[in-house]
Amino acid sequence: MKVVPSRSSEWVRPVTSQRPASTIIEIDRVSQVFQTSARKDHVALSDISLTIEEGAFVSILGPSGCGKSTLLYIVGGFVSPTSGAATMKGQAITGPGPDRGPVFQEFALFPWKTVLGNVMYGPRQQGVRAIEAEAQSRTLIEMVGLKGYENFYPKELSGGMKQRVALARTLAYHPEVLLMDEPFGALDAHTRTRLQNDLLNIWERDRKTVLFVTHSVDEAVFLSDKVVMMSKSPGRIRQVIDIDLPRPRRRNELLLDPRYQKYVVDIERMFDEVDETGSPS
Amino acid sequence: MISPAAFARRAAPVFACIGLLAVWQIAALILKNDSFPTAIEAIRTIPDILGDKEALINILASLRRMAIGFGVALLVSIPLGLLMGRSRAVAAFFNPLLMIIYPVPKAALMPIIMLWLGVGDVTKILVIFLGVSLPVIYHSFEGAKAVEEKMLWSGAAMGLSSLQRLVRIVLPAALPEILTGCRTGLVLALITMITSEMIARQSGAGNILFNALDMGQYDTVYAMIIVIGAMGIGLDAIFERVRAMLVRWSEPQFDMPLSFS
Ligand SMILES: Nc1ncnc2c1ncn2[C@@H]1O[C@H](COP(=O)(O)OP(=O)(O)O)[C@@H](O)[C@H]1O
Ligand SMILES: [Mg+2]
Image: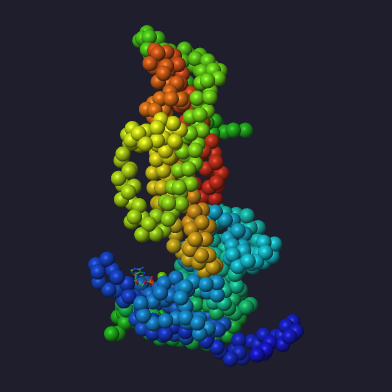
C-alpha cells in the first residue's frame, strides 16, 4: 500500500482540520493503586479512558494529587498501571520508547553534558552520525532561543533556559508524542508566559501530538485543542472540553477574545467545584 | 594580578606549616630530649633518606603497592556501589556483609591474612584494598541512590538499556559523590599501606620508619614522618586537581576536610 506520492517534495501535508482525525493514543479503563505507608491502598487513578488524536494538543488539568503525573507516566511507559491498558497506535505500551518524549517539570538534564551534548544525546543514541546530530541539534537550540549557549553546562543556565534545553533535547529524537508534565510549573510568571508562547510557535509548525499536564487553567486554555478536567480522590476524568479557538493563537489577541475569557471562567468554576468536592463516588 | 584575599587563602597553609615547625623547633630546644630531635635536625635528615638508593626503592615499592591496592579497589568498589544503589536486591545482599566488615580495623585482619598469604606484597595489597573499598562503595552507593529518577527516565525514552543507563547516566551523575569517596579512600590507602608495613616488616616506607625507631635513629624517624606526611599531602593535592577537572560541570561544593579514620 503506497499512498504517499513518490516525489515527496511535491507532497503537501493537509491542514490539520481537514485531516481525518486518527487515534494515536488510547487509554483504556486505566486504574492505578498505590500502597501507602500505612498499608492502605490509595487509588490514584480510577477507571480512566481517553483517546488522543494525532496532532492534537491535549491538556490534562486538575488539582494537585489527582493523578495527572501518574497518567502521563503510564503513557510514557515509566509506570505500569494496576489495571487497564494504554496503547500507542494500537500497540500496547509496555515501557518507555523514543516515540514518546517526556519533558519534566524538574528538567532532568544531564548536568555533565553541555547544552549541545544534552540535545545531541538522543539522536546519537538513535545512531545518527555525530556531524548530522550536531547540525540538527544546533538548529534546534537556535529554535528554542538558546543560540550562543551551546557550550554552557546546565548549572550555568536559569530555570527557563534549562527547560528550553529539555524541550530541545526531547524534540531532537523526533518523538511522535510529547509528554509534558507541568513543564513550566517551576518557572516565574514572566518566563512561563514566554515559554508558553514559544512552545506554541514551535508546535504550530509541525503539530506533534502533545499531552500536557498542568494545573493552570489559562495555560491549558491558551495552548490546547482539548482540556481534560480531572478530579481527585480517586483521580477521575470529570469532563473533556474542546477549546474551539482559532490558530495560530497570539496571546495579546486571545486575552481580549470573549470566547477565550468564557472558557477560562467556565473551566475555573469547574476547577473550584472539583477541588472542593473531589470525585463523586 | 592575584587579589589579597586569594593570596591569603593560598598562603595560609604555608604559614600554618611554618608555624607548626616553629613550635616543634622551640619545644625540642626546651625539652632537650634525645628521642625528640629539633625540626631542623629532622629536615636535614630528609636528603639522606631520599639520597639512599635502598630507601628510595623501599618507598617506591610502598607507593606501587598502594597504587595497585587503590586501583583494584576502585575497579571493584565503584561498580558494586553503583549496582547496590540502583538495585534493592543487590543492596540487600551486600549491605549486611559490609556492615560486618565496616567497624573492623583492616589492620587487625592482617595476622589472619598473613597466615594465608604470607608477608609479601599480596597481603599488603589486600589490606590496602580492604581499607580503600568501604568508603568508595559507600559513596558510590549513596551517589547512585540519589540519581534523579527523571534523568533515568529521560535516558530510557531515548532508548538506553538498563546497563547503558548504569554506565552512561548513573556513573557520571554520581561521579562527584564517587570521587569524594575516592579521596577518602586515597588517604586510607596511605594509612593502611604504612600500617601493613609496620605489621609485616619486610620493606617499604613503614619499615624504614620502624627500623629507625628500633635502632634509636630518631632523626630518621621524624624525617620519615615528614616524608610520609608530604606524600599524603602531595597525593591528595594531585587527586583534588583531577577531581576538580572531572566534575567541573557539577554544582560548586564546599571543600571538605580530609577524613582520617
Ligand atoms: N510512587 C508512588 N507511591 C505512592 N503514592 C504515589 C506514588 N506516585 C503518586 N502517588 C500518589 O498518587 C496521587 C497522584 O499523584 P500524581 O500523579 O503525582 O498527582 P498530580 O501529578 O496530579 O499532582 C497522589 O496522592 C500521590 O501521593
Ligand atoms: Mg504532578
